[in-house]
Structures are given as structure tokens and as C-alpha cells.
Length: 416
Image (cartoon, rainbow, N blue to C red; front, side, top):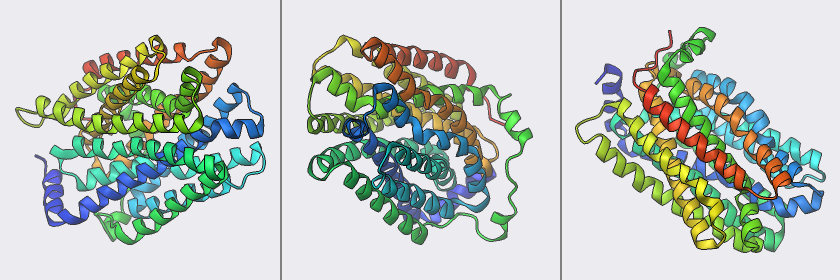
């Protein structure tokens, strides 16, 4: 164990109650973030009719928050490393929640798109904040489990946002849905500012230097980083595809109303969240039964990616139970893979003070691919009349990423 890890363990023991409160707040941040993203996917059928949108145009609208999101992943996380997760967390969540409020007031599609771009600005450092908190407060042996549990907040957010959104839209309309979810985020931002404290205060925090261009270039010379990045790119693509299009996919395949779609989508996300925690814990026990060796975590990633690739059999089913079973199982494996892959990154990066910026580099690359998912899927549906090709493409990409992770992720990631 390194001196830095010993310090983290000692700090964790001294602050055991606080760090679990921090983890809970990060979990809730992911819930709110993905609840806000789900708000658009469940509102898209109604919003599309109001603004007279084609499937291609709906794909572009679904991806609009990613335009600013991926551009600002790296700059926002560089600032995060300099000033800490307390300030950035509060500002980020407060800003995107304000964008949700404005979205509910938009009177035309141009105004609505501008609010989505603003939402992307706010959400840009979200995962950098989470990675920074885990690196700072979680012990090395528990990082994989902690990260997987935190990432289930994404699925719970999608489930809650979809289910609540469906009923709010039915009762009050999609505008009220956006404004209600925005209000919840503003409350979180205030609580985070009052509760969270950065692990390093005063001059030590202020003297940190930002990540340099040379250090960023050195990341791309690391086989381990490239293997982690390949996984991040493919899982992000499937994640954004499902998040953007699942309600419309279920309507297309099963011909159910918006309330039924919301309930089915929420059930899928909930089953996936529970399954991800179970899968992650079982695989960690198996892989680390003889002791902690971080590079071995890639075998958890590989196993989960193969499980997620079962999304490729989805076109062979046309009734609700098997569709939900396949979607839930694939998403559970995808979340567990994401948790293990993110833990690999936090474990293998030698300079832990720059984990926020390294996460930003990873997200910039992966989100540049992820933003294509809703757009490309819109074109696939428009020209083929089905989602089949989208699922086949995702399955193939996940299997390729599994091979790359197994072969490449072996050594520490050095920046220098």
C-alpha cells in the first residue's frame, strides 16, 4: 500500500460518518442528473407533437445537451481539480437545475434547445465530482463497490424521472415536469454547499497545478488508459441510446400509452440497478479472493461487457416480458462494467490529485461518441423503420471493447 493510500485510509477512519454522507449526496446527484435527462425522453412524444418534430429532429433534440457537455468535460474538471468538489458540485447542479426551469418555460424549439445546451454546461463536471469524492474518501479495496453503488443512482434517476415524468405529464403537462425536477436540483446544490468539505483545505489546495498538455498526451501513450477509454466510449454509446430512445422504442414495439411506457421503463431501470450491485459484488469477491490487485478488475469489466452485449438479441423479441428481461439484464451488466472501469481509472492513475481532469479527458472522448447515439438512432429508425440495427451495432462494439480491456489494461497510468 502506498503512503497516499495509507493517508486516505487514516482519513477515512477518522471521518467515517461524514464520508458516507458524502457518498449518499453523490448518489443523489446522479439520481437527479439522470432524472433530469429522463424527463426529456419520456416527454419527447408529447414535446415532439407540440413542436412538430420528425424522428430525425427528435434525435437531434435528444443529443442537444451533449453538445456543450462533451466540450466542457475537460475544462470543467480542470477547474474542479483546482478549486475542489464543494464549489463545483454546487455550481454545476444549481446551473443545470436552473436550465430545467427555463426548459419548462420555452415557447419554441429554438428556446428549448438553448436550455438543453445550458443543461449540458452544468452537467459537464458531474462525473469528475463523483470520481474526485471516491478517490478522496473511499479506501482502495472498496472503490469498485462504492463506484458501482453510486452509479446505480443513474438508473434510479432514470426510473424515477421516467415514472414521475409520465404521471406529471399526464396530470399537468411536460412543462410542469421540467420545472418540478429543476426545483429538486436547486435544493441539492444548497445542501451540498452546506455539508461537503474538500479533503484538502487552505494553501495545499490552492497550490495544485492544472493538468498540462504534455500530461494529457502521455495518457494516450498508456495502453491501460486506452483500454479503459475504449470501454468508456462503447458503454456511453449504449447508455445514451437507451436513455434517449427507450420510451419511444417501447411505444414502437408494444404500442402502449405514455403511462404504461413510463412504468415499464422505470421497472427496467430499477431491476438493472439492483442487478448491477449484485453482479459487481459477486465478481469482486471472485476476482479479489486472493487479495487486491487493481489491474485484475479488468476481468470484471470484460465479464460485464459480454453480459451487456446480450442487447443484440433484443430484435428477436416482441412482447413485454422478454424485452424487459433483456433490457434489464444488459443494463445491469453495463452499470457494473462502468463501475469497475471507473474504479480501474481511479486505481491506476498515479497522480490522484488530477483524477478529476483525467476523468474529464475520458468523458470528452467518450461523450463525443455518445452524442452520436441518439442522432444516429434517429436516422436508423427513420430509414429502416425499426431499432434492430442500433442494437446489433451496440452488441458488436461492446464485445470489441471487452477484448481491448482484457489485452491492454495491465499497468499504472503515468502522466509524465
